[in-house]
Amino acid sequence: MTDNELERTMTFSAWHNKWPGRNNSFLLGSLLCFVAIPINAQNLVPNHSFEEYDTCRVVNDVYYPETGPIGWFSAAGTPDHFMSCLPYGSFNGVPQNAGAFQYPQNGECYAGVITYREFPELREYIMIQLLETLVIGQQYFACFYASAAWGGYIPSPQVWLATNGIGMVFTTQQRQWELNDPYPAPLNYAHVYSEAIVSDTAGWTLVSGTFVADSAYQYLMLGNPFNNASTDTLHFAHETSIPRGMALIDNVQVYSDPTGIVEGSVEGAILYPNPASGWITLAGITSGSRIKIHDTLGRGIWQGAATSESFRLDVDRWARGTYVLHLENAGKKKAFKFVLVE
Image (cartoon, rainbow, N blue to C red; front, side, top):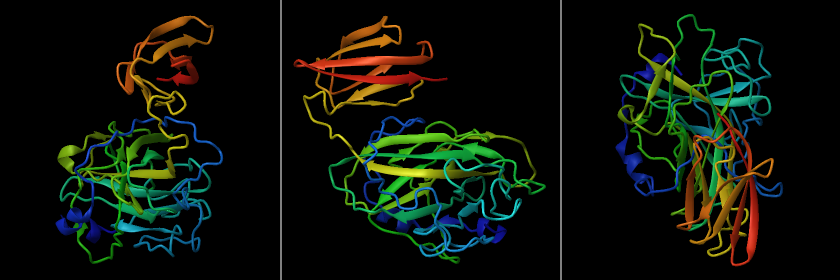
C-alpha cells in the first residue's frame, strides 16, 4: 500500500449498486464461533489460511488469483500477504513486518487489509471465488479470525487504531481492482461482521455468524465495508499523520448447515455462540420446546420453555465455565455442551 494509493478518493458507486442483497436483513455474527463443524464437512473457501502462494517474495502490490495467495485477489487497494518464509522483519514477513508483530492463527501465513482511514475515507478488500455457488434459501455458517495490526517496524506507525465492522460480504460478481481504479464506496452492509471493536493485538479474535443466501453467491470479500460514520474505533496511540487501521485475517471458513434446520424437530436445532459470553441462542426449534440447563456438577441452573423458533437466553451474569443444555420436544431429546468465557 503506497501513499499515493491512500490519497485516492473512495468513489465507484456503480460497483456498490451491483452488489445483490446489500439491503436485506440477516442474522449477524458474534465474536465467537458458534457451532462444531463435522470433520467431513467441506469448507467452501479455498486456500482458507493463505498458505498456498506463487512465490515467497517481498511484495506491496495488487494481487491476482494466480499471484500472491493463490485464488485470492485485490478487490480494492493492495491487501498484504504475510508469509513466514520471508526473512524476519521483511515488509510482509512473519512474525515481524511493516505493520505488525503477529504469528499466524493457523499455518504459516495470513492476510492484512486497511479497515479505516480518517480522510479521505479508504478501505482495502481481498476476495476469492468459492468452491461452490451458494444455494438460494440455504443457511450457511461463516467465520474467520482477525487481529488488530500493531507493533510493525515503521518508526512512525501507519497503523494505530482498531475498528469494528470487519466482516464477510458475499456476491455474485467479482471485482478485480487495478492500480488506477478508484476506491469503491463502502457498502455499509455485510453478511457476517464484528459488531465489537477487534482490539486484541497479541491474539486472534474469532468473528462468526450465520446467514441465508438470497442469491447464488459465488464470491467472498473480506474487509470493513462500513463507512467512517458507521465504524467505531479505538486509538492505540495518537500520531500527527492521518489515523488509519489494519486488520490481520486468517483461517476463513464457510460451511453449509451440516445438519439442516428442520422445523418442529430437535435434531435440526443449533446452539450458538459457543463459547459464549453475554447470551446463547437456540435456533431451529419449535415454540414450546422444554429447555433445562445444568452445570458440570449436575445442579439445575435454568429451565423454561421456548417461546419461538429462535430462543435467546441472557447468560451475562452467569459464572464462567461449562454448562449442559437439554432440549426436549415431542418425546425427542438433544443435549448441547457450551462454555461461558470472559
